Length: 204
Image (cartoon, rainbow, N blue to C red; front, side):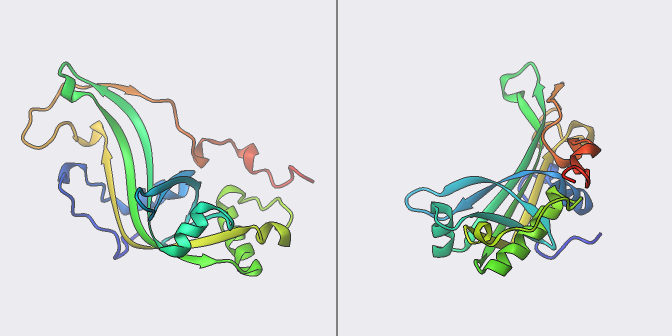
């Protein structure tokens, strides 16, 4: 799988750069929650959102009557961040307390979808992530008309990870710290669910 043109590999901490595009793609397919940063004054407005990553686009939605919808309509430049903590790292020196993690940041233009049929199509596409068994009734007009959907087209994406197995111990130029690793319990992700979560006959 070839990395898309919007994926940038340059960053200051080259030892933390995560450049394995197939692994990043799989990570974004599996994670459940992103943070959406929207332009506001005087502070950025940041909202946790469920999301679907498909065709190099983040699909998100919200109430069409709330603050997030109004801010995005005013300025469609947004930033999306997705992360997963992996383990706590400890070493004798205080400055060597750290985390293992994965993190992806995408700068996007949010294309707005408000028509009943385009919202329904957007939601059906987004639902494929969470309900691949398709064991549900169609989305009603009343529900679709309460939602504004956003196809967030990626302009630039970067990714970082710090995983001891990859030799990412300490900042460049510093001695490798004797870290002790304390893994966190497995986080919420689609892959952590059992097959019964996707039973197509559950509601029959």
